[in-house]
Amino acid sequence: MKPALSLIAASVFLLSACGGSSSDSAIPGLKADTNVALLSRGASASSSHNSSDAKKLIDGNINTSWTSASGQKIVVDFGRIEKIKSIKLTRQAASAAIDSSPDILIELSANGSSYTASNLSVFSGGIACTSQTVTTTTMSCTMAERDTRYIRITSQNGKAYDFIELEALATK
Image (cartoon, rainbow, N blue to C red; front, side, top):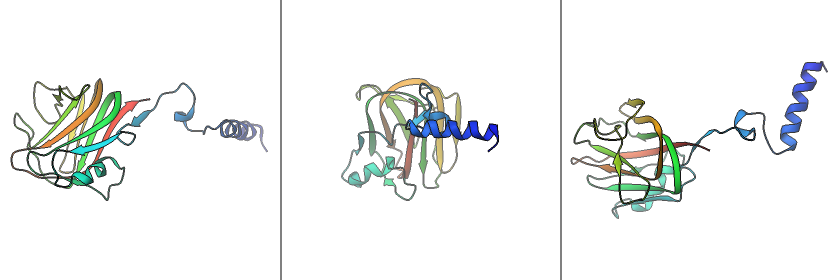
C-alpha cells in the first residue's frame, strides 16, 4: 500500500475504532447543523381534525403530512430551548399569501405563551430572515440564531394546507 493511502486508511480505522466516522460532523468539538424538529418532543394540533397526525409534520418522511383547516394551529415542542437559525416548511403545491394578513403564519417562541412571527410569513415587525425562499411547495428562512422552544404554524384566511415537513436547524 502506498504511504498516503496507508495514512488515510489508518485515519479512517482510528475514527471508526473510536466510534466516529470520517465525516466532519463526527469530529469532536466540531458543531454541525441538526434538524431539531426530528428530535423534538412532538407536535400537537389545535383541533381534533387530523390532530392524531400532527407528528407527521416532523417525522422526516416526505410521504406523510398533516392537513390543516383555516384557523387550526400546529405546535412543535423541542422540549428545551434551541438556538434555531433556519426553518423550512414543505407543503403540497399551493400558493399562499405572505403579507400583513398571511395565509400561513409561522411563529417562534421560547416560552410557549409569547410568540413572534417570522418574516417568512409577514413583511414587517417579525423575525428578520437574512435569506428567504418562498415557492409553491416550500417556505424557508435563514435568520440570526434565536432561542426557540416552540414553533407554531397557523392556516388562516379560509385556507387549508397539507403540511409535509418542518425542518428547524440549530447548531449542535
